[in-house]
Length: 112
Image (cartoon, rainbow, N blue to C red; front, side, top):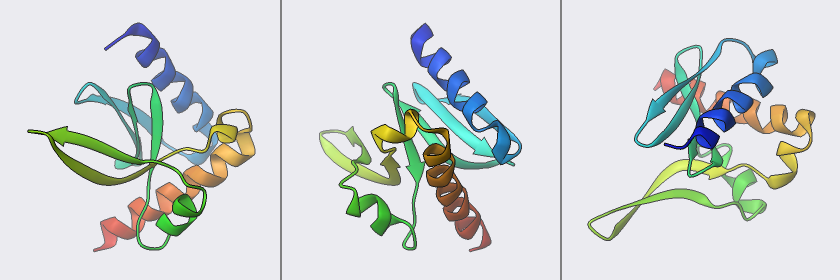
């Protein structure tokens, strides 16, 4: 993991400071981003992905955002995380709006 990945994770956690108790944890060569113990975002290869579910995934899909995919033995596995829109990194209000939707998805999943 490069120093720039660690710095990006710190930057993202700082950007989320108004959302509540946010922390990051190194995971699988990237970072998991947690709200009150629930993972709602991940950083992989310098890209921020946000959690989605059946309620919020259409919003990500309407914006043609890439889904987080990893490969194991040349087989793709898709997780329920979508890439953050680029403009959200430049606009704090947009970032928080998308992030709140991801936290809501994590909270809904935790209830099941």
